[in-house]
Length: 546
Image 1 (cartoon, rainbow, N blue to C red):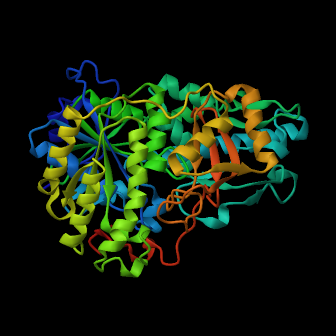
Image 2: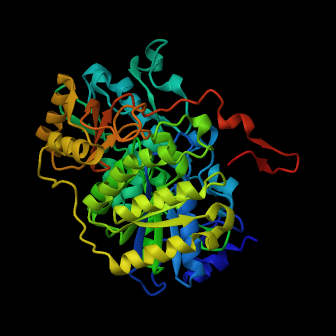
């Protein structure tokens, strides 16, 4: 039974006067909380995964179930997660609120419009786009911006491949200047990254003003502040900056805020929400999108490096027998069949992800997200593999049993935090060249032998350094389906060449985006999108989101 949101707030010492309610079961938390509850210094648990199958491996479900299990054990716990994007909700993966008995609720609300944050980010992004084209219209080709050198696109929170490249301004002088542009999905917008990395409203405004929109006719950078856009953008984002408070099915408080993808963005919820949670609870469970090569690496090298939240005290590395068999050479349609040999072969992929987490010096537990078709022989094989590699291992059954099904994982993660060595370190220093940072991630995290790119891409990266942005971390955008840049390369590819296809400057967010392989910042719908099964009953109940 859902509890009134005031009851959830009371668990954390948040009074009703600090809750901006969106109905009885969800609310924004007014910031700052002072005078509020006594600040705690909670421990952060980050949930990541091995390389997934196209359907995903239940990382969010595991995170929610772990939080419920810690709560059942009497630990003050909050789960801090990203907001779902409508792209995957209506596309391939479906909803992103967990599953079975390990869910955040009200799930349909969270998966759809929620409290309007996605709309606010989309609107702020497109306001800047409109102001760019407005300036081009009134200034012409000799104004502040060179119409051939505009880098800022438009955004939409939906998978729509036909919008990747568009032409605007056609139809004559009254329609503005004709030029090529395109759309990114909102989760890949720099505005989304800024929302998630900003510490407060002042920081938000400064970061928005630092967005690069293009170059002048004199070949100088043009920022959003030159268009006087950051004030209006901040007005649109003022309420979106406040974290959203909901609950799990078992009543564990949940802060859900921000939604950058990890394959094409930095992949974690807001630092405001995580920081708030750490001040309210003894344990905070968060997740980093997709696998350790994407979400976890960016969490460590971008989010933690920002200095607003501490390194995780421990990590959960989610594995499934489905994914192990998939990376062991089994076809998708045969993953339900027992195949111990394929499980062991697929452990090569898991092994690399274990190595990746250990590179950062963070204790870890391999958490097997159990499916009904898993067999004891397969589970035993995985357990023995982890034991041989001196990796902690726990089976979770949170989908079927909720918090009770996460007891073993909760016990192991508590032991890891208490008993295992923690010596966090970043993968690379910020004072090395951008190209060296890219190559370091490619070789040490992905297992590549090196990187290659066209001369124009190399020159663009070198230009970023010349313009004063060489100190930034890099955010690599690549496929989530492989450790490499080739989504068909399953298992553990070795000594491959990572192909860098483009680089973008996200000066406001504070990183350089590096595109690899065939990755695109506007996904397309699959042949049979989830939207085909979503409906609403005559009584107003939404069905088909899972």
